[in-house]
Image (cartoon, rainbow, N blue to C red; front, side, top):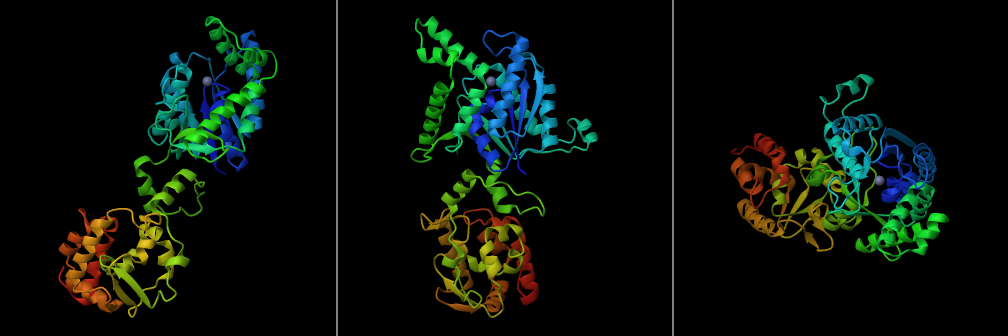
Length: 448
Ligand SMILES: [Zn+2]
């Protein structure tokens, strides 16, 4: 079961900033764990501190139930005093909870959010942010390991806040906004205090808002529903979620700059739970490198005849190794499973795109071309064909092509065509092709 942990200083933060998303994930089968850092002892109007703690805690439990939260963890810090709370011990609590609950995703305030005046929000955000780092280290808090816990790294970080520079994700929560409103209404004392703040400010301004007075004394719903809907509509408009949709906004971080690297080179861990489908990353992939379906591109006579563009003739010299490599298999899964190159396979020399292009993550359906470095690759095609003495339209037996490659492609040639530079290839950097060509030469003869 995928776990999401939401870490907030105050009882109402989760519902207010990400409540609909939590409700959505809970409905999709996630386990939601809510960490409340303070006791909210001051957040009410007209109640004693003891009564305030009691009411706010009860209301948190009611709201959590509405959202589908499975567990609430209380850290019990004094509310509105985190500015003075030492950071490292607070961070240790988060590290401990990461290691214990092993959340796939963590929701919290963005430590880089703008115009945040609440020090509790800022301090918790900072401590959570640093806990992401040190929960992975085996020398931070080794006492946790005595309990059988282990270093752990959260995968996705969902940051929220009043103002998020770099907001990059809107979760479509159209079907769950109602839950969010309901959960916020459950936080009656805290919402009344929030409304009262605005009321007092309006008084200083010399005015009053009857809508606020009505909400203070009676039903919170009309006011909260109005505000939440306006907010969610604005998010949906900004992120083009579609007509009539509603969203919650986040700065969503996963692997950062390493996202593509991980996507291209990773393979599933046997028996491990796989990551939930995430629209943002999947959508991004579709935009840049949509793949055509095998039905469109894999010819029925694939194992008799394959067309290869100029520089892919070089790859044919390393098919055996490439087809075994996880990175290559992941990139060309549909093709690798279907193509079994035999010595008699006919290789047709093409000038232009071939079947490998259509299965490559850099292929763009929208633009109908390779999305990266395609101009350079055309010059590479011409250079490779000239070097091999092949012409478009020519058909060569696969084994004869391998013999030709063994004779004509030295280590220096391979380096010129494939290593870092204008024609670079990621597979060369992984070292498989150099080894493959050495084997080819051992088999057919040729100069290294
Ligand atoms: Zn708060």
